[in-house]
Picture 1 (cartoon, rainbow, N blue to C red):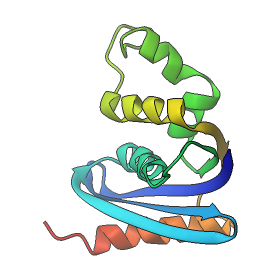
Picture 2 (picture 1 turned 180 degrees about the vertical axis):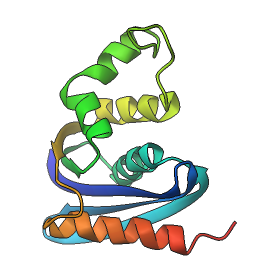
Picture 3 (picture 1 turned 30 degrees about the vertical axis):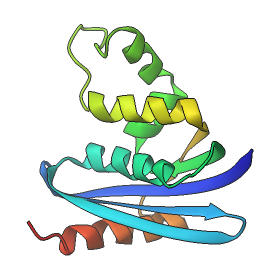
Picture 4 (picture 1 turned 90 degrees about the vertical axis):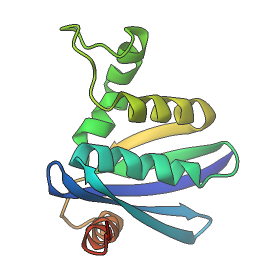
Length: 146
């Protein structure tokens, strides 16, 4: 199974507001940078979208180290919350619906194809690729045309 590294980040101007996401995929020393924007979204949705769009670029099942500064996204997998939500019909312990169910479903589906390992990185720090993803996301926000 091919080993891929995926760095991701999301940004939002207002929350909700115009949002952007950025991702860098690295395989065999080759980088692919992607980004996009949405006119009305939240920061959490953009963080998750960056991971989804990065994984969608993969043409076959891969082992993927996913680096993100989003505790929301990383902890949902590392702590296993997303699997509990899925088991409970995407309801939290208090029986209220989980936010961003559509994106959690997409991530779960992709996690069934790829072997994912989520790694939390500190945002806006010294991680070169996180900073690149942040710039991709913020540039997508700046360049968004409704």
